[in-house]
Length: 172
Image 1 (cartoon, rainbow, N blue to C red):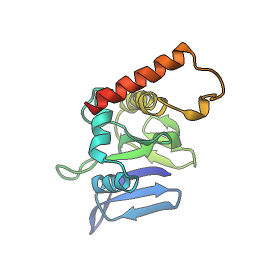
Image 2 (image 1 turned 180 degrees about the vertical axis):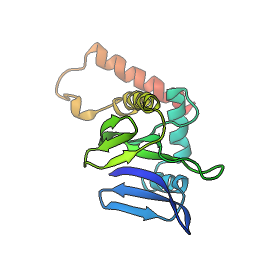
Image 3 (image 1 turned 60 degrees about the vertical axis):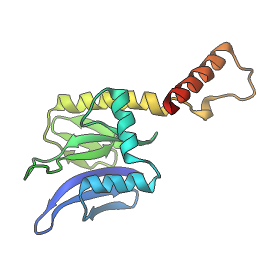
Image 4 (image 1 turned 90 degrees about the vertical axis):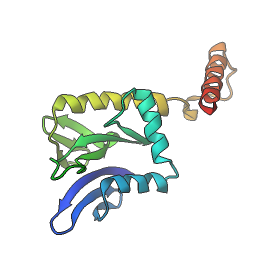
């Protein structure tokens, strides 16, 4: 499970990224955007399509959270100031691994602190966007909540009909 991907400037090398997952923290010698694309590719997801769907749901174009799966929703946080133009300044932190957000820092569940340089209000606004994405993508169908031995109600049938219509609209 991915915990975070943060942009990092390494003297003599340039832009790299710090990645922390269940294996531990490591420095990867590629840009953050390429690392994100690689992670999506490893999980057989189309990065551009995920971004497009998240943009559509949130009705926002830039600096949006990204959904990998129901346990990994990446929250963008401004970590550092740009050194040059087109410099990557936003890191992505797994929303479900955040314990507490305070002014200027995020406390993770393992006790690690990540400092950020944007307003507290902007970060809280983005956490609300994460909840919107979570409701749209992750709460759609959770099979563990269904009792397959109970008879279907009119509400169940209406729910299935809405899902079919939604999928039909997506395919058009």
